[in-house]
Length: 515
Image 1 (tube, rainbow, N blue to C red):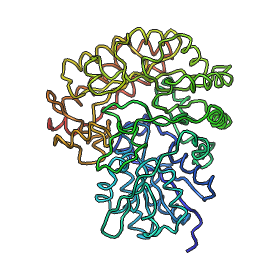
Image 2: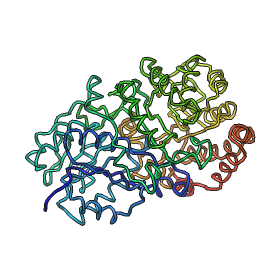
Image 3: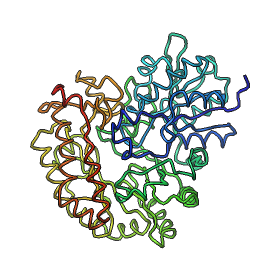
Image 4: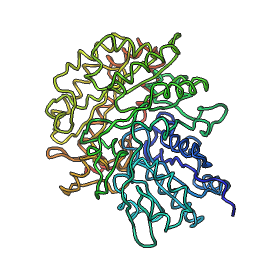
């Protein structure tokens, strides 16, 4: 059979199990960053590529199989990331379900996986998942291109750095491959293959932002896109696995904090990508960088350029920042003029001692309330992130964190139960200390029925999850918060929040009062 496509990138979907009833209307559907980056890198080298976003199109496994059959690709690459830090593992549930189905239909399919889970646990993943032929052990750019330049036979696999692969009944792990260096970012990661994304009536209409990003207004959620101006993070928080994409060793369990590194595209290069999105009519955009407002050398010129496109204040952007890098009013003014109307801040805990136990380089004696006040005075809203169940948390410390969040009263509020995510130091420590780790991919999802967070010395897992879920409803039904939202965004915004609260997440370990 003639093979027309070199590689088809698959964006897997299992949102109904990951988000439960929230998946119907409320969970975001994000443009698949790494599928877009890998697709563009591949076709710039002359390879023929396609993207199948099963999440955006809500494709069944058989629909996907028929698409792939019609494309007849030499290689299938599942790109398993997502909009939350845990998504690389939780989305493995939908990815492996589909890969097993594809193998059952055609065992000759060459199936590869890219993503944080397989980067963290390459050998273990292939031992468990018989439908995977090849895994990429870091971001996979050079390994993928080198692989596509072969006939995709076992003898070829043995020569490719940066992969783990199946050789009949053996799992072989090759030497590591380098990641794209800073000086080659514009060349070897040459942008996004936006034109390969599916759409219904017009580009980007199958993608939707989180409700809060759209000012709690459904009309602003679509069209929507996510873009990165940098990759990685220079810090090494123990609960985070973001830097696992930078992996450069073959240890049994990869730990993201060992690979802390940031790389940037040039301002001119990123501005071209924004211009493409603006031409498509996309104005609601997430800047996905873990630390966008960290290095003024990169973010100030970009903000100044973006401000030229935002004369009518139509852009609705949001970005991540450390809370100790946005204290200066002149910086906040530039950020706001650029159309960045939300800043996402990792406050994590009200307790300084608890924060410092799980992070490196995190803020110390910052006046959190004062910083939030300055941000609000600059007409920028805050999505505040908190974590319940950090290693030395107890009910009192979690309550103090909740009380702090109520006092700060930000227009966005998000809290997770601490999870031992594969690729994080918490995961490695949990394995070494023989703590209970989730047995299924869905159990790593913050919102799933199977969710199983990490217990602490003082708290059972179900107590942490129960506290988190009650805190979510308490905060979002709080009159001070609702009044702020109504004053800022209108009555309908408040009603949309109240309607969302009608959806109650079901939790297995809470029902059973176990673990």
